[in-house]
Image 1 (cartoon, rainbow, N blue to C red):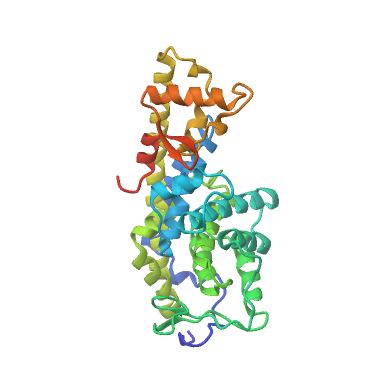
Image 2: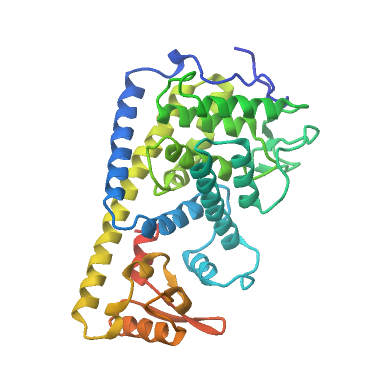
Length: 371
């Protein structure tokens, strides 16, 4: 093992995979079995839903909020849902907008993988650009990026890590990482183990000026989809990471400082296990709410029986125009239906800007972190 100096660019970052004796023991294998089983349960449950996309937007939004909070970008649920309901150009830059950028990056990456079937450097750069809303790519080799204890680039904080630097260095490391992730013949390692290893390696390479943490966590979710452990991004990994943020960063640092792969992999497997279980609970509760809503609508004598139920669950805030379809052709008809739902206690109305928006309070409560 070459001694690591946090003040010097980590150009000696070892390629993947690490030696198996650093992580492959009974404790890891037991945790791997549990995580795999829970993830398979989540995939199976999601596949029984009449329309998985109903849950994707809501769960992806929670993932976006939590992943941004890991990077100290905080927004309230109310601010977030207000931003989500606004039309283009109505919201200012700020924490809520940053969270929505994350969700858009997740979808952009999903579309790239669905098209290419592998994770490419172009996909990674696309995700980063959506997260940060910039047009650059891999950081230039002359950029002297360092990671400080209390943030990025602070002159008063201690340096905790200096990522690789040099002409072509980051590009070569990223090429090796993507080969490791995509080539299961050359690297026949369990997908969840590879995900954990790849996530560390990506954060250690630190290929972009900023936004590496959020980009890396999106890649974890997309990797599970690429390897068919999930069909859609319906898992909420950042919830666990946010609640255990100190351990997350400490475990990352321990791989760098002492090659402690075992505890890092155990941490990431626990992240998958806990968040799969958490997401399963969310899906059951949202599905139960949908059933109750459908029953109440069916028992009512109002005209809303023509309404498409999934539209009420795509996001917590609903604009009248969101309901427009072949069956609902005018905004006035949509407003009428929303008012009828409000009269049944299924929605609440609030004025945002110059118009009224209806929101699904019970759905917001299910999605809330404070439960």
